[in-house]
Amino acid sequence: MTTAEPATTPQRADFAAEPERWPERWPDVVAVPRVSRPRAAIAEAVVRRALRGLPLQARFAGPGAAGPRTVGRGGPLLEVHDPTAFHARVGAHGLVGFGESYMAREWDAPDLVGALTVLAAHAAELVPAPLQRLRPLWALRQPEAERNTADGSRANISRHYDLSNDLFALFLDDTLSYSSALFRGLPASWDLLAAAQHRKIDRLLDLAGVGEGTRLLEIGTGWGELALRAAARGARVTSLTLSREQRALARERVHAAGLTDRVSIELCDYRDARGTYDAVVSVEMIEAVGAEFWPVYFRALDALLAPGGRVALQAITMPHERMLAARTTFTWIHKYVFPGGLIPSVRAVEESVRDHTGLTVARRDAYGAHYAETLRLWRERFAERSEEVEALGFDETFRRMWTFYLAYSEAGFRSGYLDVQQYLFTKEDAAR
Image (cartoon, rainbow, N blue to C red; front, side, top):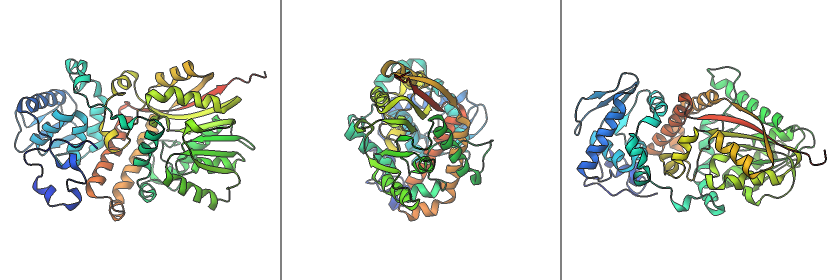
């Protein structure tokens, strides 16, 4: 984590009173970055200009407020408690600072998803065109250490997925599926989530043609539900993960199901996979590959797949132009949630498959609204079990960060900024 330059007074009273928010734990949340007065004024002007035309209300209070206390055309409320700190963070670190300001309680929103959905829907318009053109000069760059090389990928994956199996179990359903469910109808309810996760898995297995005797490779184990479900169909499954915590629990679940003769869970990078498989399935793993390695990833799928085989891929996607703008930028999500990640566009996926493999894109289905509901259910469950999260040792700032992450992601799907796809890729049988 890159530490911000401390402000003259790095701690407000509420920070100093809360041991879990000491500087050594959350340095860039406790410390307000020092920015010049002109830069802070420019940040405030840009923020107010951006918010003025949006269907929300931004209300500024306390020292540092300039101009009207409330801007916006009406809608969800975004309440800025400390405008001076808020504008300093945005001026210094853009959207990274925006997220850190929320973690620091400098702003809040009674309907956090609603406010973030408005911002996501207008993401392309928030920064004026002249500043967009200068993006390479002001946007934070991804650290070299977070490139998804073999070593970098292991470190990046560990930072998220090795946090605690118990943490994930508190807000996921009993299938421990950490990807979009597929509901019969919307809106959804918690008691339907496990069935909707099985529906998603079954559809992927159907796309890949998985059945009795299928040699299946899964890239990205999660906590093992897809491998278990494939083995129950009679498949022989090799599942790859870089998370030691996930591997341990997935192996326990395979053993408990009596399927150790059909499922092998391996700590292995996709680049090191060997063998030939009738089918390959990968669920929301491509987002952790990184743009520079997409060709390597898709070539690996092609090389591991037998002639006549099928690949089922589930991927989060974003608009191509926004992806191009984001591909070298260091974001709040990178810093606090998914280091090294990048969401591809539909175009990027299909161009990578076309240009680097012999695979054919046979089918693509989108269902982003289902991800919004999945995330809502996770977010509500996380909030309901906040005390249990705290009991695991995750402090208040972490819980606020995780709430922002889930709401931020949900807003992306509700606004249409993000989508989720299920792809079928096929490989021609040379014998035919």
